[in-house]
Amino acid sequence: MSVGSVTARIARQICDVEPVGYSQGEDRRSWYANADWAGRCSSPQNADCSSLAAGAVCYGLHDTYGVPWGHPALPEINDHWTGNLRPGLEARGFDEVPWADENLTPDGGFRAGDIVLSAANEGGVGHVIIIVEDGYDPLESEAWIAETGDLYGERGDQTGQETHTARYSEHPYTQRGAWTSCHRFNEAKFFQQWPEFAKGKAQAKSAAPTQAQAAGPQHAHGIDISSHQGGLNVGAIWADFVIVKITEGTGYENPYWRTQAEATLAAGKRLGLYLFANDEDAGEQARFFLDRAKAYAGRATFWLDWEADALNLAPSDALVILNQMAAETGSTPGIYLNGAGMESGDWSAIAGRFPLWYAGGPNYASYGQAYSDPPTPTVPYWGGNVLIHQYTEDGYLPGYNSHLDLDRLRDRATWDRMIGGGQVVSGAPSPVSTSSLLQVDGEYGPATMKRLIDVFAPGYSEMFAVANLRRYLNSTVASSAQRMLIGADKLPEDRGWDSHVIRIFQYWAWCCVRPVAPEMWSRFADGWSFGEYVDGEPGEATWAALQEALNRSRPGSFRLM
Image 1 (tube, rainbow, N blue to C red):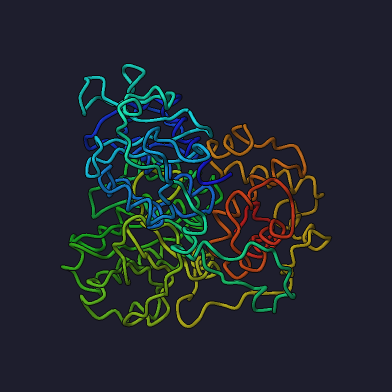
Image 2: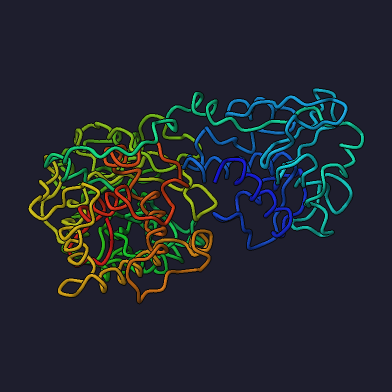
């Protein structure tokens, strides 16, 4: 796998297989917004020549180096067209490849993934193609023209030629000598420009971790959703927890909340449920919410979202709702505030009893962020004891083609204690017991096997534990990703270890363990690309990720982290 090979594969997939037509309208990037991990589109979409090129390069960088979706190292489609694609490519590791002007062919021929420009500002006609095989006269893929013969068309390829693959020598712009430049990915240049992806690739076995390292951070990542995410497949999203809006005020009920809540529990994720308050009577708002939510007592945490019109009320009204939630569910509810809410009154009476879910911080509005670990804000009343930090409302995650609120949970144990009630907010998180934790040493030995059994098959054998691990992976890794990796929609669930379950686990670990365990990852897989890690071959880096995940998992939970 390389940037060039993935770029070429995606370009050809879109042009030759998927129902993608041509348009320069607002839907020029719809193919990219709706394609899955393998570049497959389940419904008709559109592209134009530059959105196809930039998007295919995004796939190349993501699949090869694990560059997160939305990272600035990926050429954002809305920012690029043929007139500025050259500097956009050069800023992401591409070099111009010299060629002879008489035949417009580089010395040594083309390579798969080369981007060939006809830039109008450089004397060309305003077009770009992607070379999809090596050679002196290779095939190229392109988004060419709408079914109308113009620049704008309906979604989908109406003629079979709106997007297509053809021979380079047969292209009319080759025959006219209209190409202005050829650009090829240079790994060393990319690493120089984006050093966070350029760490050494040697796997070094380090000394045994300290007890503190073995305990590891107890934070987790998740999302909060409402009716706006009615089409979201919760099971396909990598999240430890999902917080679902049930009601707003005394009259609105999210029509999808039960489906969203049940899907969250079915996928083995932590469930939260929230009331979005307005300025109506506090007790009536609590009643409207609890009539629906309290059936989930003992299975979910409960939250009061206090912003917008709710700020016309006082913190004492919020306390009424929180107290009623606590009394009727036997839990410790929490409150959601942003900066404006924090400044709207005196929250001291609430801060001493109820955990805080806070929205804000530096770069809150940053576009396209994936999961990250920003510093936990220090805020009035709660100080540094922010349990959940919503650090962006414009996050993007694989498995969903629109923006999401992304949240970081400081302490899983506190969340879990909230479900059962009790005082949980004051001071630091409760210490984590290390008596049964594994030494993260990258060795799959008797201790790791025992911990795997404790989590996935208490009282049974390793074979049963691996079978249940397979079921868990099937519930959390999207079928489209599994097709890309193993050629099937899901793992067989009646088998032990094999290359397929190793590959799917590696994929899961790349997405779920790598972001939350950077120290472990740097010890065992420092600087590795996606393709180097997700190879189906067990090794220290794979077993270390399993050990890390098992240390973060509850015995008998039948799920990881």
